[in-house]
Length: 317
Image (cartoon, rainbow, N blue to C red; front, side):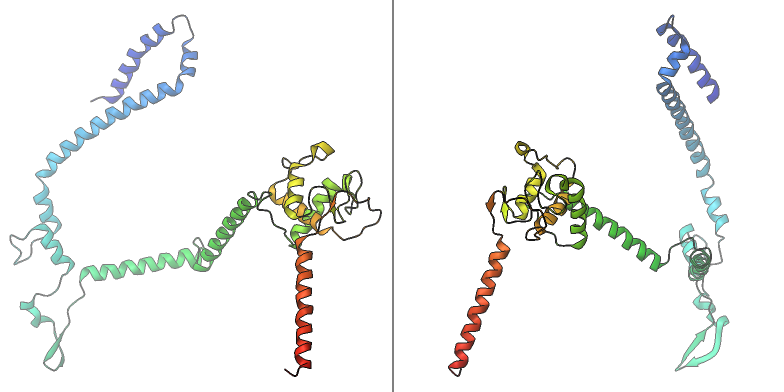
């Protein structure tokens, strides 16, 4: 089977068809347009012919090998006395567990004896010895690889790499969680890094209308207790996110990610009661935050408990 001649013949037969299909056109342009298809087609034909040739060769080799199996087995593992008629695999097993036969143990007896038991000087099985040799080779390669060339990572280095990978995955997860913040799930963040980031965002994007310190300007005062759209963190976040187009405040949803809107909303939340100079007059309705009422309730309960303790002391209890 002459493979190059077959491929050449197929290409010669295909050329007239291509010429007929593209009569009056440039063959080079046709090849450039269908270059991938032509290459794939030729490669498929070559691969098919190579597969057929390989299968044919394998069948021929198999036929030849059948007549040599018995001869090769005998040449690989010689037949020792007493192994006449024993198969190849059984002889292989005997070689792997090679030891002195019981009938010839007298030749390997030593002078060591205890309680009627005498010690043999038998050699270790070949499979054990080869396993031991392999461990020695592996140990040398391991030592050179990890402790001499430093091409492999030790356990400590692998641990640090895994920790870095885990930290990156945690940060990626937290970042994805930050993007899920909305006006219903947002909470106040008192972390210093978040408040500083919120302050920077406020100064760069909000101060033009609300003043550098939130005292108000074109926009309302953010430092008093009067709010046009609510003074809790959810309402502030909602106002920042959607804006108030009817009053000239734009929506920041397209310019800030949810985490940034949470940061700037938390910073605005902390401006209440800061009492800056040149404050704009109050606008909106008085908004008492729940924290203030909770603190007053706790102080009232503390005063009541103190009075009760005093009464108990006066009663001698």
